[in-house]
Length: 234
Image (tube, rainbow, N blue to C red; front, side):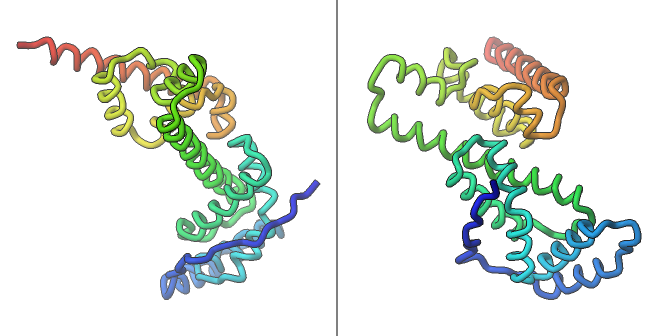
């Protein structure tokens, strides 16, 4: 059943496309659409107008692709309807700020939307996790089981037994990773996602996710060994 589409709220957002947007619109009008379907032509027309700063096109885009974005939001996060709609709203803000050139096929647009929605949903999950930690930090756990859960949230299941110094080192290493690598580690060890779910969110196979995680972990082990050697030297 289609979801009711809430009003698009872009209050406070400043659109600054200007002459650059006009140039991109002109550039896109020179593209050949000979092999494009009607859906492709609609995609390129809407995205061309969006990069040119056309607010009506942004509204049309929102209504046309709302269900697509909603499905991606739910698949990425598992949120309820209200939270998924929040993700869609934030996705539209992200689109407004990050779309730099027209997208010329419906397939390419869906792939791009999936990447943007998943990124926004992941940010929401991280925000929820930080809020949970803050709340428990101030209120205190009510049971031993809750204490364990908080520990896992703060440190990650696989590294909860590390001392503070090693945790600081690990946090610094994660901060220095490229975004894709740190995202993989967080999905797997902080959010406890399965390899299959990670693969679905990133468009990768189960084996590809496992291989990348293994390489990341081996690199961390090597760097940890090097750091230990450095500390042991006089």
